[in-house]
Length: 244
Ligand SMILES: *Cc1c(COP(=O)(O)O)cnc(C)c1O
Image (cartoon, rainbow, N blue to C red):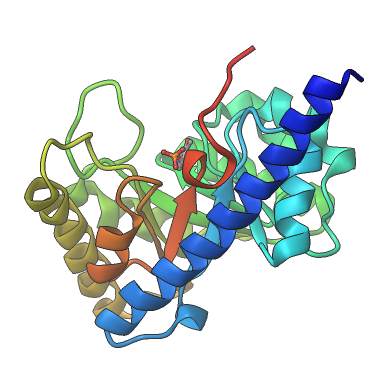
């Protein structure tokens, strides 16, 4: 390794450290502003494109949850994650035919938006002797070509998934539209929180509303203020993504 790249590497570790503790501080403040504490908020790092050495460095600082988007990338990095200290989530769009490759390896699949996918997760979980935690993904902005069910379809899908043997719904996840103003993003987060509370209050059999996963690098504070208890931060922690 050249001297120059060594320096670049050292600087990247420093940046991750500063970012990590900065985000933790922001989480504390936003949690306090919404009557909670940092312990009530799960900080998940979105690790797509990030090399395992940087992911593990963040874990060494105290990070406890990581999430990958692509099955292939996750499998190629799988043996290198420090999974003694952190849990691995799948947060990207998941094709039904790839489910068997990740069940048993991930602690949660956050992006379930149709019954066929949930059925396959249950089937593969049974084969592996596990129960897989999932979140139902909601397309709160009703965007075309975006994953997630519409608000009004959520109840029906939850009812169907509740019947499955080896899948456990733990809450809701959403990726709202890109917004020009904070006011606009609050509108979507507030809608999600309302849906989350509505469903929680119904106390559906075999459905736990433990997690509301929303908020990314640019808007995790707004998400927490709106009631999120799990945020997914990528570039804000690891720096801008470089796609190879
Ligand atoms: C990449 C990604 C994130 C994090 O995005 P950043 O803007 O880099 O924080 C969160 N959630 C999902 C589903 C992602 O794919």
